[in-house]
Amino acid sequence: MAGLPKGLTRGVLLGGMAAVLWRVLAHRDSRVAIGGLVLKRVGGIPFLGSRVQAVVQEPLITGVCRAVAEDLVAEARSGELLELNSAPGFLTVEMGQRARDLQITALDPSPHGVQITEAKVHAAGLGRQIKVAMGDAMDIPYPDESFDFAVSLGALHRWPAPGVVLGEILRVLRPGGKAWIYDWRREMPEEGWEMVREAIPPLGRPLFEAAVMAPWKAAYPESLIRDLAGKSPFGGAEIKVLPVDIAGMVVPAIIRIALRK
Image (cartoon, rainbow, N blue to C red; front, side):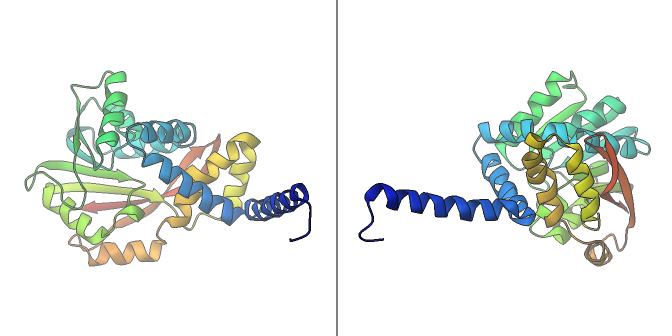
């Protein structure tokens, strides 16, 4: 842009950058990908990041955690339960409040994840019922046959080797023990998500795209889940759809994988 006045050159450059940014943000898939990446980066900031991430996610996934907790405690009302990737503790507290005879160990791989889960647990007055510990689902730090039940929510598509995790879950379950793996349902129609998005105030829609639609896009299809379960030491699974409340709308957004030892 030689020969143009300095101010005009800057204006042209800024205008071009704004046009490119507008075109990117106008495309839903781009917004979802960018929002998910930003939320993931924020969550990686020690201590502060997990708290910011929790504040962003809580209004959107509270209904999901309630539905999952109600589904689980219909069978697991007492005994010892291991929750994997527990941060930020929403599901942990929901389970503890619904089944007071259920002793819960909430395991998370990051120290700030443990901190924020502990804060949630103690704020709910469940410190005697729920133990929070640091540990990786790929190498669960407990002896064989330590738990009656195991559960995870939204972690399946984030585990680097799901088959290894399923083997670890089987190892720490007692004979007859049961595990539930809940994750976003990849087969949830995009039109359904659009209805949910429209029910959210405009200022909250970018958070919805980052906290809900980004992990939905990353989730495994049911065919791959069935393949993973079939190849796991469990040798099979009961798979069904769990309707959940998001922004006041009940949608078939969660897939539930039940495994028995």
